[in-house]
Amino acid sequence: MTHVSSIVPTPADAPLTPDPSPLSTGARGESDPSPSTEAPSSNSSSSTTKSSPRRRLIWALAALSVVVFVAGGIWYWQAYRVRDSWLQAEAALNRHDLSSAAAHLNRYLEQQPRDAAAWFLAGRTARRLGRHSEAEDYLKRCQELGGVTDATRLEWDLLRVQQGDLGDVHMRLRRTIAPDHPDAALVLEALARGYLKCDRLRDVMEACDLWVACQPDHPWPWLWRGGVYERLGNFHEALSDYRKALEHAPEDRDALLALAMLFVRARQPGPASEHLEHLLERNPDDDEALLGLAACRIEEGRPKDAVPLLERVLAKDPAPARGLFLRGKSALELRDPAGAERWLVRAVREAPDDAEALYQLILALRAQGKETEADRLAPRLEALRKDVARLDELVRIVARNPDDAGPRHEAGVVAFRLGRPDEGVRWLQSALGARGDHRATHAVLAEHFLRMGDPRADYHQRLAQTP
Image 1 (tube, one colour):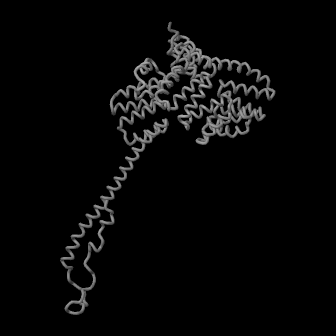
Image 2 (cartoon, helix red, strand yellow):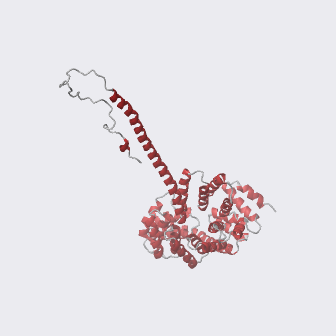
Image 3 (tube, rainbow, N blue to C red):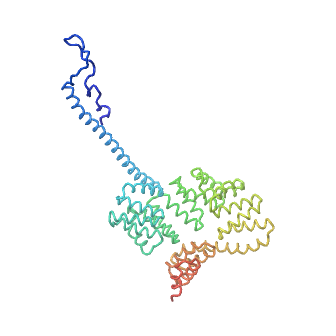
């Protein structure tokens, strides 16, 4: 592009006025002292007239060049931003960072709102994040722009299955999606999520086994299968799978936390602290890592070092029940039973199913000589421990017999008794999809929803009375 200064005329190139200097001496030999009354020559007037349009044309061309340059720069910058958003989304998906991918896809769609493929990918990403209503909206927009396709039909199936609405869809998917299908790993991921929601733990493990065969370097099937092993009480298998997950994604927050908390529950504070400290180097405000590290400090006999970690978490509103429990436990370790009682009363109120918190509260009461209060809580602790143990056993029974409604119904009843209403509803609703007489399950659900003022109570009351 020609530089602006190279096309702007100089005074020498385009004289605008006649030369004002005195007339040089001619044949008369001296200058005329009187003012000249002669009109400018016709040649000078003609030169000025011709130069003015030329100068205006040059300035117009210069201005046009600037406008074109600026407009081109803006267009290029916008195109770069659109392209960069798409590439950033792809990179985030490749490293399994779904939240970042969703943010980049949303920015891309702000600039390219008629890109059906982008709406499809945004819908799939939202589904994998558990943002189900958002995924539905994106898929509908994709079909408005690109029509209904095999890909969108499959995505609707995955959206349904992932939410635990298995029906006959999960078996059809398992029959029709072969290991060499380009979306096989995504189908297995959705199946695993849906089976987890329905507490079909053996099916989760089978889906993860197939997923590992398709994508052995993906961390999630190892992580999720490890979680199933942990729920079933198999520490060594869980440990092996969590380590595999970290091997494939050393910086994955969920894998690091899962492995660390497995060590915490196994009362191995050394290796747990290593992973938790690494997490806190990356994010000093990670509440779960702070609570885990505080538990390690207490286990190591360093309750004083746990207190500052816990204070960072308890400064937030609402304070988490586990934070209240650990703060009370640390106070008891520091020989402050009265302070421990204050924290532990709050912890038990927030988490009535936490047997360890109730046990520590009883210890704090006895340390102050409050035997009557402690004795009054002791039967509750015994019942709580029995219910927790029974629920753990029912989880293993359901894993062996996923289609039997009986254990699922009992698990729901026990969960309600433990003060876990959401878990109770989930177990009972899953029992309705299994074999057996469901009238008792409908009756329990009707009673719960009636107590909560939920209109679903009428529906379950009718079914509870149906022969």
